[in-house]
View 1 (cartoon, rainbow, N blue to C red):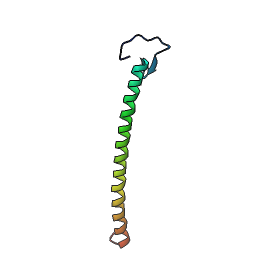
View 2 (tube, rainbow, N blue to C red):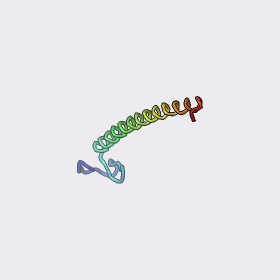
View 3 (cartoon, helix red, strand yellow):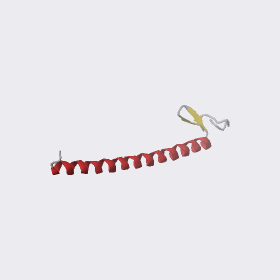
View 4 (tube, one colour):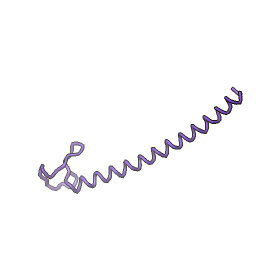
Length: 70
């Protein structure tokens, strides 16, 4: 627990091998959710940028192939 309050086993919740009181557990879950959502959006943006870049290059190569340049 991070608050160091005494909590009985019935009231404590174990997460990642550590027992938390309800207040500390709520704070820990909120911090994890915020981090996960930011990482998810960054991953999505990077994937979209990579897909656009690849599709643009694929169209150039396909046009060159169709035109008989390769």
